[in-house]
Length: 310
Image 1 (cartoon, rainbow, N blue to C red):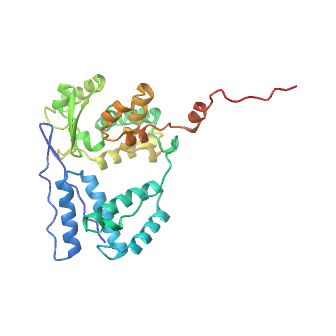
Image 2 (image 1 turned 30 degrees about the vertical axis):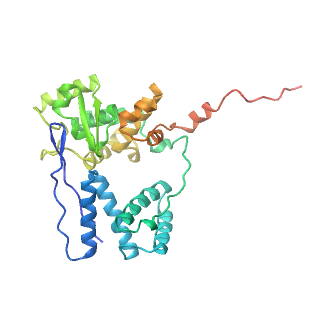
């Protein structure tokens, strides 16, 4: 089953998102196509991001391909869940189940919603998958040394502000001039400050490339760069930078910001504001200690009583 591509870009007009996107193709007489069309419109009306729409529609089509039905039976859904558990990690299974449940509610089968897998929160993370400060610096330096000025600045902008890759488009020449950017994303608005040293770099970049207004990070066609652009550019730096490719993706920069901020300030409420999280539980996932060794040191509370030798 083919998955339709969703590549429409948002435009920026005075910090506001222009939602006049490329519309979905009109559905054929096929009922499945009609439902997918309406499902997409439902997400657009609720101002979901393009990445979310793309992911949820992909999972809806995957479910229908597996079960052969728009409204699967309880038995089919149970078998589908088992299939997911055999192929993916629990966290990925839960993401797919959430998307599946969204589809079930949409088609009126919410009573058959699947339960997610129970996962105990880890207090330390796998360092092999985390971008650390040294990795970050090597990526930036390699980008600069290989003439990829835009990539180096994009990496620093995400790393120093904690914004999402989809929010990079709001870093405009006007925002840099004012020292802050208004972010309208996922039906929420927040203001993020641009650190002075980053602001100076961005101003210099704008002068060099004669950018007088609108998004700073744009493609040759004048569109704001997207997740795929930055992801590919970061991957291309890995070998020369000596960074493992599995660490180099845009969202890891956001996690790096969160860990560095929390280690410095220990203020999870303010961090949630910076990251644009509505739930502190979401923010807590960003602040897990990054090594088992650090956790072991924290557990050294002076409560061990050595046996006295006679």
